[in-house]
Length: 585
Figure (cartoon, rainbow, N blue to C red):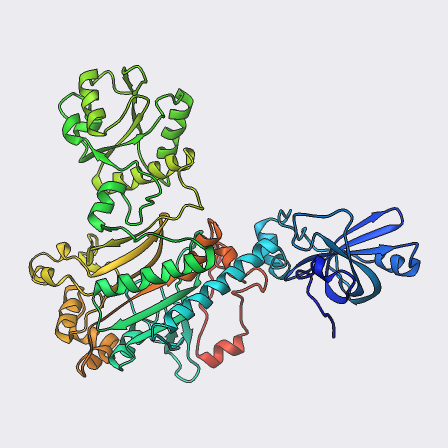
């Protein structure tokens, strides 16, 4: 046996016992005639002690070791004279009696410590080494616990885990598909699933009334901190349910995870309509850890000769408590922030409500103190507060003001990662219109049910139809989303028509689903959680990358295995694929 104990489990109660450990050399410290080695495995670190006076040959053998060598050591557990309170095994050490080198190691390209000197690309190239770092390993252990508890919660509520196909047909809606050529059907292609949506609805028709799957999904889209080309969903569907049933079930799952993993009891989640979320926060995933909601003041700003406000469709302010003392430099920094291309505002107006009750603004030339105080009153500001105002086209300005609000939340320390605020956003628009193409697209997907009372609007005003759809948001991050589905084939046909599908197109792409609905489809609905994002919230990470064992970089590449890569022409010939020559410039 290579080991009788792990490097994380020995305590004072094990003193004087003989043990065998195996692991990686983390650190070597030579102090006179003593050599100390920190031995690491997945479970922790244990100090090994070698005494030159007791066993010179063994000590010399230990002195020849290098970082990340794999060794086996036998010895006696003893109480440490100099204890280390930072690790669970810090009260003991192993007095080594035997040492076996299992494998030597090259010097690693970066330090394998909590604080490493390896840059992102270097760590991704040697990801198998990066995974030895405890901070990365702990994220994967957290991911395991969350998936385990998810399965336990859903199993106890009669959900069945069913695997759905990975090679499916391509659909034009949504993000770009990853395409897979078929050797046996040359000229035809599979797609990798963006979600198991169609199959889980078919399972409802099949009578599997509670389904879930922790499933890989794929989207060929530009990457960012919370996006990878392949990602994992907790995918769920239920039959004979309405929206309230789904929200209660999966609010329960979220509370279960917080309680069993973080020992946090969450209160009931508030609910806000999409319309109110946009009006108050300028975002359909608002961060409600702090206030600073929007106040519209357009009616208070017109007619004073200030063209920026007079010409604007929308003027709104946020109130930053206690920030009237901001220096000119700090206000200029905020102005520069909103002018960044990522935000896109042309400028920023401020109003200081000083502690002495006086008012000072960047538009004093156009507005009297009396008028500015009407803004202050509308915003419910108090002496010492600072109003920050943006103006322009409604939707665009709301998004800009949302970015400014979040920036102020960061600057004021109001976005504590250990403070968890969850909510449901409901009543999304069913459709959104592409003005250039002159047609509607589904806000979620074509199988989302409209609100029953809004169905007549599909003929007269499709853009006003609300969806039976909902998103769960935690700390300003969309964790999951879903909807009640259309289960009536006639309503589904109507939906395809509004989306601009001809009968032939609808039949070609979704005929199997439409036919299934004719055989007794139950009312059903579901939700999908982004597991990677969920884990990142629990871990307090800004990026999902370190919640994934082997992630891609921002260019969609796996730099460790150098993928994607070119394939041999013989393989392409087998697939019936001919590469187009690259023209020289």
